[in-house]
Length: 227
Length: 227
Image 1 (tube, helix red, strand yellow):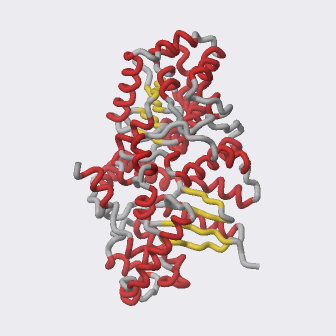
Image 2 (image 1 turned 135 degrees about the vertical axis):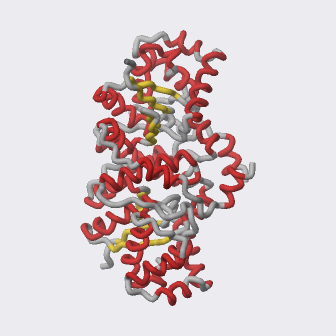
């Protein structure tokens, strides 16, 4: 029988994706899950769902950076965000595709996240990324050449499209048994779910979600319902 | 000397505002803070910051309802959302203004939140709201008449405008000593802050926030920078 799978969707733009990458590997090990790491383009998720990212609302960016700094301090690791933020995450994401990173994928993801969000390198810089690759004994020039091919670019677009097709609207997202959990704050609930103790009353949730919408903002109606 | 103040910004549309209302009163008591409860129009915050609310992205609404249901179960209270959601929150918000609710304000906020999110009444219905008011011994017909006056409508608009002027972008938001915390998941950090043990390195955060933006989405640029 194939091992139970957990799909993890991430973009290096998100510090929460980094935070959850720090614990999701242990959770998967604890429950014997195969961890499938999917790099996706967060900006494309936002475009699709018509949403802004946290770094796109200035006071939200400030509040969340403070949250991140406190979270890292309280959890015993360094928080030093990538040199410029937002930045172009495409080279880092393409390097992290299974077809490029191969067996080193999880190790590479850990190294890129840690370099970007704990040591503050420029995650858009191919030179900085090359250093990360070399530190793992990977062939940086070959890999950086490979990510410029049309096939690899298509692979990342496909990962993103597949994520959207599975209703992924943000990062980090975890999907196990078709159940979607979004956000670093889902650790407790995901753990309880995997223990087999999920308190969710599914018929009740389905009933709630099928209820009538009493009102909608004009801007929302224009964006979603009049196209 | 005046007591230290904590400003709490909420809209009944948000289950997280309800969840945090359940603990913020105890936090304020613990640290001797005066709790100032500010009803604000969440939709206007979203309009201002160009953002969508959680209930406006269908898979996000589903994931968050599940989160809420699990959270309530694990924290030992009932979760039954308002009959229709989203709904028009204006009557409930206006009833909760200090000028209308007076000394009963906190008690009224607790009662409306509990009726809406634990017992699932229709929070847009004046008849349902009247029942909540009567259960507290308040004069519902007088209060429901008062909220139709121009002065009261202006008071809610003013609360919302003042919140935006203080960089409030979502609910629940807590501001103490000018420090903004957003979201139900801030309980731990807020508590540590109030203990006087905030681990935040402020110069470092300021330096981070002043950094260059390496890239922006076209849609964002259109929305915020080309107006």
